Structure formats: structure tokens, C-alpha cells
Length: 131
Ligand SMILES: [Fe+2]
Ligand SMILES: [Fe+2]
Image (cartoon, rainbow, N blue to C red; front, side, top):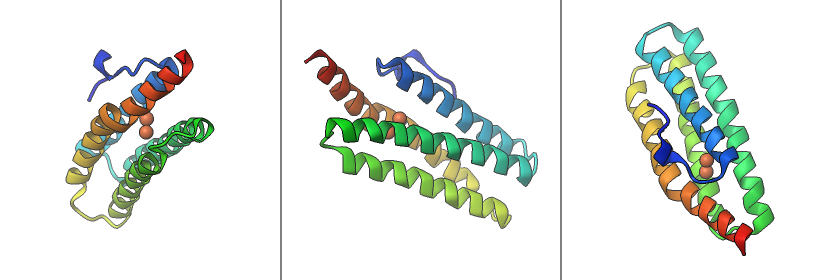
């Protein structure tokens, strides 16, 4: 999965973070697909999770400051992503199968979230700046 210009939401800091987010998802995918062993998968998971949490928090701070109306829904979507990461982590630690559909979930989540909730959020922030 690679960054494409159509992923840009018009706020450079957010775009940079999303590009990094995507790179970390790709790293995790490679670690699982190449079957490099649980240690490396766990490191890739930890990196993605740490970055995702920071990124979500940064978005949520801006939402709070602006009294963003769709905040509760958006925060819920962020929480679901973290839950799914925790589930992949558990499966990795316990050597369980079934991580591939979860990776699909992460990929689909990322693009749907970006083109849905994040785009709405970015548009509303850009409008607020102009107004
Ligand atoms: Fe985001
Ligand atoms: Fe978001």
C-alpha cells in the first residue's frame, strides 16, 4: 500500500502523518507476509500502535479545541482501530491464525477513515481557518 496524492486532505501536517501511518501499515504487512517471526511482527505492531495513538490524539486535541460536532463518532473510529491492533498483537503472541483478515481490516479502515471521517474533519478545519 502506497501513498497517493489523492490521499491529501490539504493540511500538510495531517498529510505527512497519514503518509507515515501508511508506511507503518505496510511494514507490518511485510513483516507478516514474509513470515519473519513474531518478534519483528511485534516490533512493527508496536511502532504502528504508538504512531496511531499519537496521531489520533493530535486529531482529537484539534477537535476538542474547535468543538468539532462529529468528535464522539470520530474518536470511536480511532478506538476501534486500536482494538483491532490489540487483537493482532494477541494473536501474534499466542501464535494464532487469522491475522490476514485483520490486516485487510487495517488497510480498509485506513482508506475509509481517510476519505470519510478525516476528510470531513479536515474540510471543517480548513473552513474554520478561512472563516
Ligand atoms: Fe487521521
Ligand atoms: Fe481520524
